[in-house]
Image (tube, rainbow, N blue to C red; front, side, top):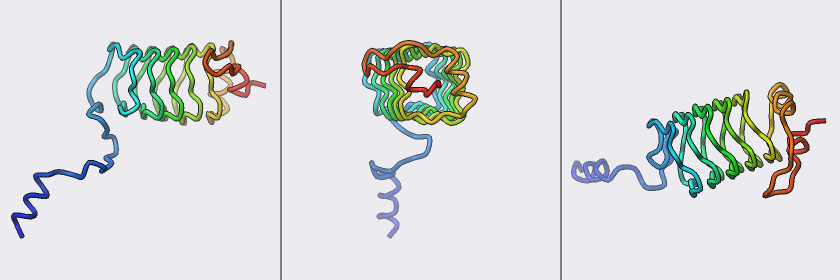
Length: 156
């Protein structure tokens, strides 16, 4: 009866319940200018977060959501962003030097002015205009994967 219903309400959702825009308590709070470098952040969610000039350098961000995040000027150098969700994010002037973005989702993401030297974009599907913009500045070889940046972006 009512006691059982109250117990369910007090217990909250089951631990495996997925909540859109939810995660590990990281959404909707500003992360601007934080130093989150050299950390394992694979269980974090930065969906719609303010991450302006946040330092993620050298961090493990595999599969992490940066959906619609504002990460202008953020430092992702040497980070592993494989299979992460960067869709609709603003990565203007961000630093991706030496980063691995293999299989990342980047639809409608903005990378204007981003430094992508030595980054690996293998299996990343890009709009033609974004690909052309990145190819203009693509150079080097990723130190972790040995993949040529221009080749990973299919800059022919």
